Image (cartoon, rainbow, N blue to C red):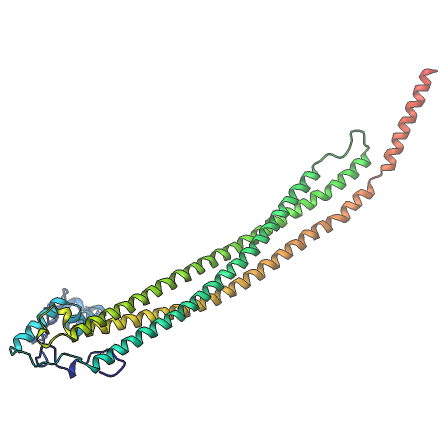
Length: 381
């Protein structure tokens, strides 16, 4: 076996049972037929169904090709992961080699087994180190998302506070505009002047109400971003933990398979083949290879996850910058429109105040008073 590889080289070794290379009987369903079967034997449809308008039906052709093509024998699928087939294979090997096997040397004794153990330890140490680095990077990405969420939440809080302040100001101005200022004895000019004065808070209240609605809409947009950032950060943390658990489980499984394989290879020569099939060195080595493959698959999944998280964080940062830019610009524009609304109303209100002729009202009151005095004196005379 080459150093650094766990793949069993079945063609260059003697089986632990001591027999020459076997011609294993295939289980039913894997037996190679002496003669090819006809399409009528392979498909539930008749040959007439294999053509539509004189053309071959591709699905039926593919089905026939799969049926007539023998499945390639796979040691791991057909023997290693099937204890019943493994027992049958070993029984056939024992019947083909009835001689005792006291002089058989166990598979992978000595230096080769030591080299394999060293390879396993290097793989385990490398997987542990790489997983630690990947987890640290994933934690960094998660903290970046959490920091972006926290900053966005503060901006959201400020927008909500501003919207609340605008709404409160609109309500206060509306209450001020609803107060009756004119007295019952005030003349028309003074009444017009007081009404024009009350138009100012009423117009400002409407402007502030519109500003509150606009700021609240921007806050809702920012709220959606905050919720997504929170979900993404939680998802990164959860997926990273699950993938780390997968790598750790694969490492433990590979080490356990290596221990079983070393125990199987260290058995006395006469004991080989007597225990369960799980003690057969060929089977234990193949399962060790499967454990290595599972570890590599877990590591690859962790690498793909890290690449996906990096792209995900970049996308979220871009989205956050775009949302903040749009939201803040809209908020400033809302404030500008609110102030412009009051400024546009100011000249009209000033004109109303100037047009109110309170001197005429006072002159009329004075004339009325003088007439009343004169009338009283006349009556007294």
